[in-house]
Length: 370
Image (cartoon, rainbow, N blue to C red; front, side):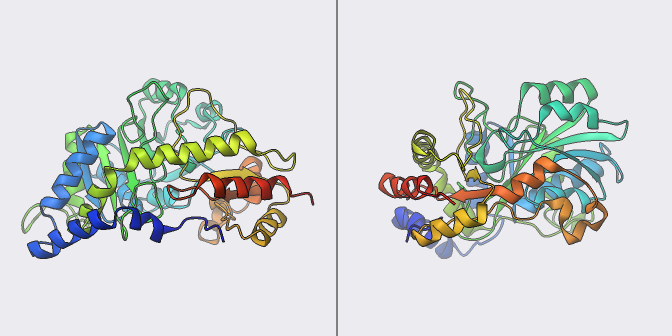
């Protein structure tokens, strides 16, 4: 069986280093807000290319706290509009509605599956205060046009970098996703390119005031012990997860290069008229958290691959605007998004998937003929 993502094998790659790191934390007797978190925040900020990194409990909290901080600092207010891709994981939108902000859904480019920058300006109104881009599947969603629109209209640019650790704006740019906007939220869920052994997240930014506010909000609203400036929450990255992340951060670029080799093999060898791949952008530096393909007979293709002992997943079967939790949007017609969610299938890709296994995936996909 070819697993979609074998977390046990990935952890085993660095078992000795992870074991040493976790023992160090256990032996220290200090499990929260200690040296390991500080060390990881410093290393990750340097890696991403920002002045600040604040560890939090998970990726959803990272995004939620960014917008909560902007409200606390008077830069936004409940009821403000935020442009967000319609094709995304629901966490991107939950972070907005939790802050009583109004998401404005914009369709993706059907060729890249990322937010269509040609559609954004028409969605901007006098109430728009921010654009939230999502580097979905490990592909960079930022474009020069998006940057220009933010500057022209005075909009805060926030990145959801949950799926794109290590991705660059392009192959020749030193700028990584997570440093391209005003702030970014990151998830370290175990299956991510940089995954913890549990939940974890972070906010990166060059804005010192925002970083301080996020740090306080994530610690019950306190920037000083027993002094509470905000009504905050408990959302802290713990020492054990930080120590594990520090180990895995050292190997992230190597792991991403392996993902890129697998993706290159797929792009070069997949050849089935029924199966469509997102456009491969010239000079792109994607990190392929997920390798999506589109097929109008998606369920049959998934069953075909299952019969060939290949595990696949769907990202995602139901778009946010059709979910029960957002009933007020169920009437919306977003045909590009809806087609993606009907047709998307994710092929195996990971640091431990071998080229031989990738070849088996290709053979099976190419043989699909229903």
